[in-house]
Amino acid sequence: MGCAISGLAPKTLGETTEEDVAHLNEKQIQMIKESWKVIQEDIAKVGIIMFVRLFETHPECKDVFFLFRDVEDLEMLRTSRELRSHGLRVMSFIEKSVARLDQLERLDVLAVELGRSHYHYNAPPKYYSYVGAEFICAVQPILKERWTPELEEAWKTLFLYLSRLMQQGYQDETSRHHHEAASRKERPEKRNTPR
Image (cartoon, rainbow, N blue to C red):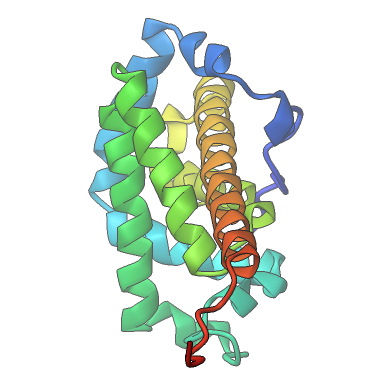
């Protein structure tokens, strides 16, 4: 599986800003869109490869997935309908993200909402960038000679941006739940005492 990428370095999530995606020039956006057309042909395969690689390189990620938590045989995962289904959901998110590259407001809402939902799945932000790195490793063999350092940089920038927005959504949801819990504690309980 010799992909050398172990993360989305050199930037970290905190260093990625909206300007990074805004700096995706028209050529880079077109490169991403064109490469996506090829990737789409093997969308289920990419999703499975991506998650099997994720579980190989970061086995602690399996803890987030109730269905896969105790599966040691990664070959068994390759044929799992549940993993295929989850991989397709992630691929759908990537497809929607690519379609919204020209509409950053809509892209922002999509990614923040996904981060919020990941709070409810107990999927912490530290794992988000791993998915982007494994996606990049999974698509390189599919794109073959179309894969270039420029295309890799464009995809990395996109995934860093999406990861940061998802992290923001996760943190927003965490804060909201802590605030609600604190509000409940501050309210006195109604007592059924006679007057």
